[in-house]
Amino acid sequence: MEELDAADLQLLRLLGENSKMTVKELAARVNLSPSPVFERVKRLETKGYIKKYIALIDAEKLNYGLMVFCNIKLKQHDKSIGSQFVKDIMLLTEVVECYNISGDYDFLLKVLARDMKHYQDFVFNKLGSVTSIGSTHSTFVMCENKNTYNINI
Image 1 (cartoon, rainbow, N blue to C red):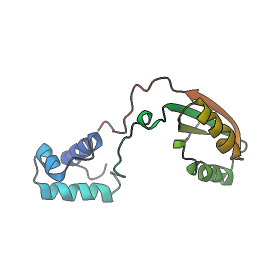
Image 2: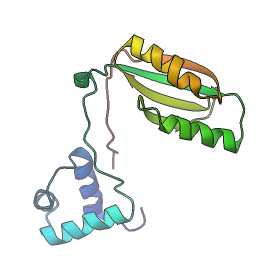
Image 3: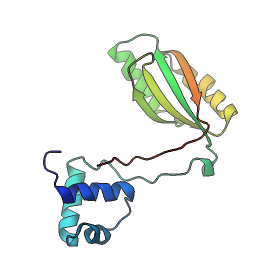
């Protein structure tokens, strides 16, 4: 955090809570005029502190109520196999998050499906076609207690 002052941090906090706040609303909250706030936000975007703006969509309302964390163990470990795995996973729309992890497994996938039948079809027909996978382990989410992308700054 090389060049961030208190106002920058406060802007990041506010935008993390509600990215639809207008420059005028942000300015009122950080006690600055809109023009410097606009410039600060643009700088935070340019420097990569703000990666993008998103809407958190309710998956259940769109009939994607089954959330699964799927642990993946690769057959082999080398750069080309890992890279190809990531490319293959990027094409699977059911996978909404993918992490390269340490421990007993190599990757952790967050998967959204309509129901168990949809997930079964996904595992057999889509994930099963990824040739670099050695084994999988699925954990089904019963209740989501906390979901935030905001960072405690």
